[in-house]
Image 1: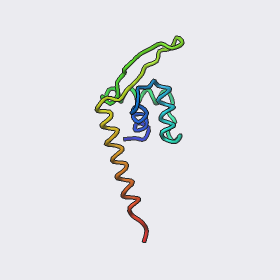
Image 2: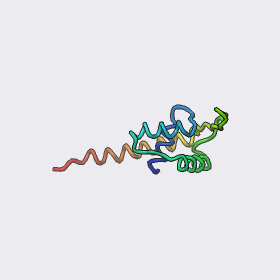
Image 3: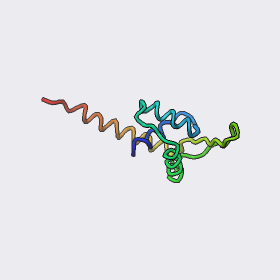
Image 4: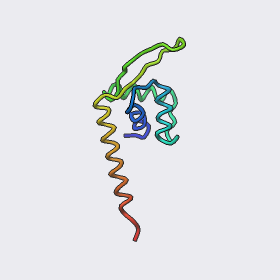
Length: 100
């Protein structure tokens, strides 16, 4: 899983969010390593939705603009947890090996 995808999913782990909130939360969680453009985000959201990892849970209009809220699906939560476990195991391997 690519890092931007991981942090988009991670941004949705605690509550549904709209696009700008996902961009902001992904940047926070990644300590500013992941900075998503609007175009990149919406391409990723479309792909993740097609893959069944996220879903639209609410549409609203705020100040005349449509705002769509996304949430993780059960498959999305599983994919996020599997990737987090994989990364943690990879980190343990590196941290366990110390130069002699």
